[in-house]
Image 1 (cartoon, rainbow, N blue to C red):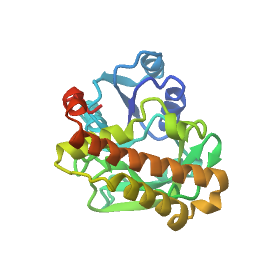
Image 2: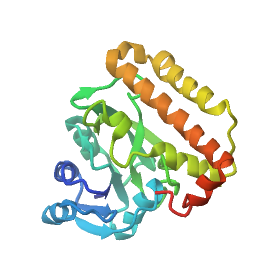
Image 3: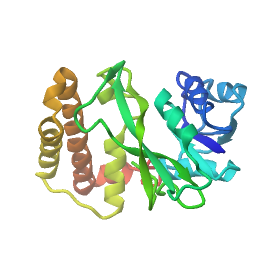
Length: 260
């Protein structure tokens, strides 16, 4: 038996399809909600999910909140904008989870912009562990880019679908997507420091990695835009870190107890 866990914040557009996707393989669903103001909670409850309200703690911390509300050992954790493919459903149903030597299973992830599957820029196969035994492992308790800390995972030959962005503009302006500001705060708190060249160097490196080494040039406009957004995000991360170091007023006005 598997329990599905989803973290949400104002996901009324996504939560119904997400829960219905999980219900194909899960006996119950837990939704950990970060104080949504739309219909997310009402929709989740109508579909039979257990809803837990928790102010957002950060990625890994938030995803682990739901574990206390699950009875099954095996957890399938996906985001509200992700869906199981038919192949993923079949492979999950075929697993002998009671006798497996593995503590987790990873899926390839198809990241989309609109309806377009982006295969370059490191966006595919983008393996991520989403099915795991909670008695043996869980998400790392970090605030950003958390992953399951499995010791003996297995890669499944199937995909998750991730509707990452509705359009190209959201790569730069998706609501709540302040990754650079969050990352800068975390780096500053850890004692990391930047110099005057850091924003440019890291931004350029990010672009070259995405566009050249991860073959973004094969993706046309989408590949170029993904590479540029990665460069901008990296540039801003180090520019903001440098600002904390150089401007006492900015530092004084920043609330480091509220990274999110």
